[in-house]
Image 1 (tube, one colour):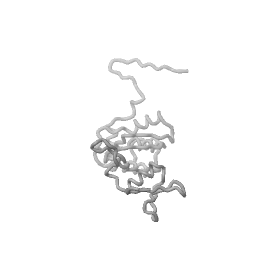
Image 2: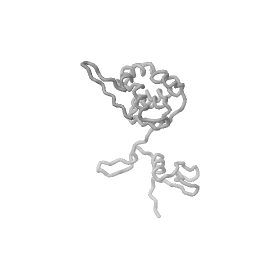
Image 3: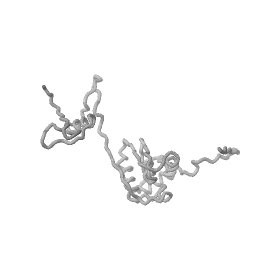
Image 4: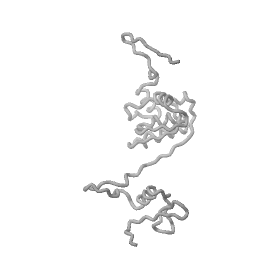
Length: 196
């Protein structure tokens, strides 16, 4: 049976919500200051309690959380402490100055702020960091698709292996052999022209 809750709004009184006790940006900024020992460079970081509430409502342990604008890494830190898998994406340099150091502290059990005590977090786990290569193709000044000028021969060979479903593994014996898909199926990549 469903129950309907109604609140009578009185002059100057706001009805309570599930968001009343999750903290403010100022609290999150203070937590970052304690964690990094300096004034936070983020004006409005998300409070860990807010992310805890959202992740609790929307996911189960073991689920995958995506934060495509990672900022200071709050979502990943909270998801990690809650036993969720996570993927964060960030283009800014603060990936190296804030996110990676923060996650190392979470894993090492050195992050005592946020939801740490509430979930009895002691540390553990790990993460992988990937630096994405630039786009393989770009348009030239006439609008034609060409191979990106930032790619060298090794990057091009690795990209082609990935595109064609091969494992990138340059051969020590055969100069152009750059990968394989089976024991007898190899890919050869060259920047030269091939004739019959």
